[in-house]
Length: 407
Image (cartoon, rainbow, N blue to C red; front, side, top):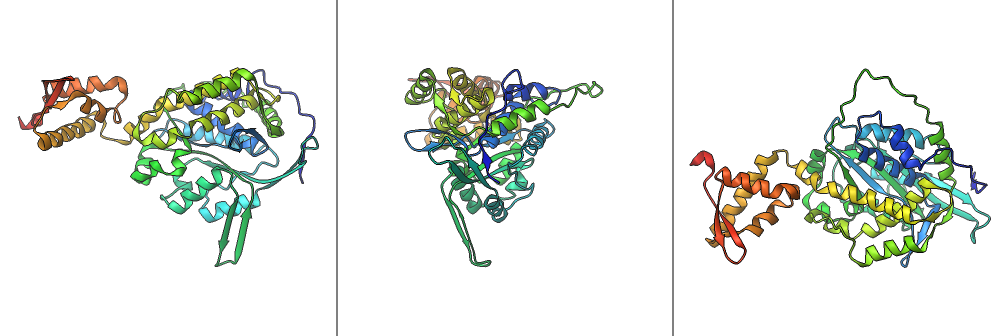
């Protein structure tokens, strides 16, 4: 039965849906950044392909691929459970099975057909396929790095027509307007185990927003549990689900996004593994602007405040992304020191010259937070791993020494 546009219900929540979700889940141990991005994904899912922004290239829809990355026991799966419960309260929204392969994904997406009617639109009837995936463990969705599966996820993300033939079952699956939204959770160690080095340059991961937190919230296990009344969240989420049509921009909101894009998009994540991700940040910002607008109001009018929220969410997540790669190295500081010492040894053996400070800094910047680089160098000097030497024109350089235990 097609969904027909009707007068939208008034919102019940006193603040935006995302802010309300974050507030109502504060009794969970999950860090706020994880609760926020779970809520962002929650709205992205219910907007489906019903809402869009017209860009110079094409219509852009607000679907997202978001992976929450933490060590075990921090509360990422709790947030996915909350979003899944809310999604399943929205009649007509298609949520994928818990365990899904590439073939069953396409089957589920093919079955997730949606028809909406908006008599005010130039084309009143809209037909598309929209599926929401919740993966409490990324390993269930991606048990191994399968390039064919990754390419499929990449193609569907962009909303391009999907066409597949299966000889064994003599099936021809055609999905002219697919839409996929993914909210998943994993650990740094799983990313390290499953992702080959070249995966960071490929389409799937460059389209994915990785949200990391190492924050541990210890709560009183005997505290009184607050009321679990989600009726207002459900009501307003259903109202957001019923939004249809293009979103408009205020002149100031449009100017803010255009100026940021044309100036290069500072601050830019600098980790080498994020090089290809960086090229997609503008589309992420536009999607987040739509989500911020839908969270706030039914008006489908993106304001300066919505752009500010989008910038805040993305920059906060990007600030933590390099920490994922540091967490992947389970050896901690000692492992980084050993790697840096080996790097300097190799350089010194090749050139026989003092290694400039910038070479060591560039090596360390992808392995430790920026504010820890000089501390790490100081530890290496005091631990007698390296010796500082004058090195014109940069001023200072280093010569590797034998490991302390060998001295």
